[in-house]
Image 1 (cartoon, helix red, strand yellow):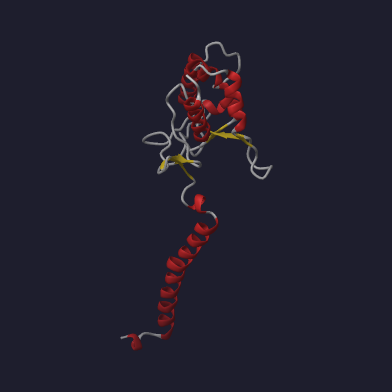
Image 2 (cartoon, helix red, strand yellow):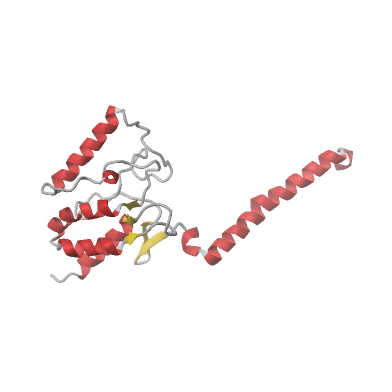
Length: 199
């Protein structure tokens, strides 16, 4: 049967099989091998482990509901916040009254926990991003939460401010993005600080 096929069709079948093997097997194995050799942490999802157990990824945000920890940027992914399988935004435009209602509700919650604060609420604490998966918040958003955590944890504001400043990362390569604080890493350090604190 193979001998009866036209020469052009034979060539097409051979090329299809060859490139399927090359692009579907050889290339992925090669690229994965190079990644595991030079960037093993990143290839494995930039997972953060505590005592050998993965507690999250440096690249994917997660909710922190306890008022004793730093809160992440809001997420509007469905059907639950920070759903990495369904990255996306609320798609509510600036003129949509529902967006305004969401923002006002988040502002009221933040002010309820920081009733004496005179600082304006940072915008990234009341609005979600286009991905809904941001692992970082602005330094201003982290510093804004110090008053709440200081009161609940009985830690001085100076200690918490120092902790935040230790976790501020600058612009990527000095030019891209903005200074940011990874919420998971900050809360891990806060947990260690609480654990090591003398009773």
